[in-house]
Image 1: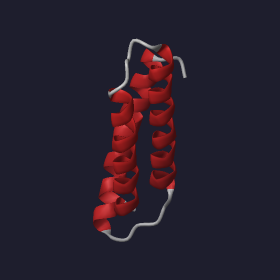
Image 2: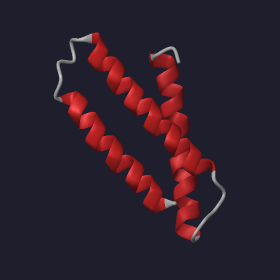
Image 3: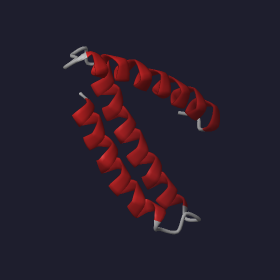
Amino acid sequence: MEKRIQEILSTYKNEISEIANLNLNVLSNIEKGIHISRRHLQELRIVLRSETFENKTDEINKTAYKKIMKVFDTYAKGVVNI
């Protein structure tokens, strides 16, 4: 599970860095960034909801990631109407 999470985060970092280099005053560029973020967050949610643990560390990490996702979701709903 942790390997898959690292893959998702690495892909996200690469894709979002391309957006960061664009003119963020253009709404379509911001929308692209939001789309990329949402897609990767959904992938993380799917991985985190899987109940397979390779070891105790994965189980602990899943709990930590769930807490982070809950905070992010609460924040995102307050900032952007999703």
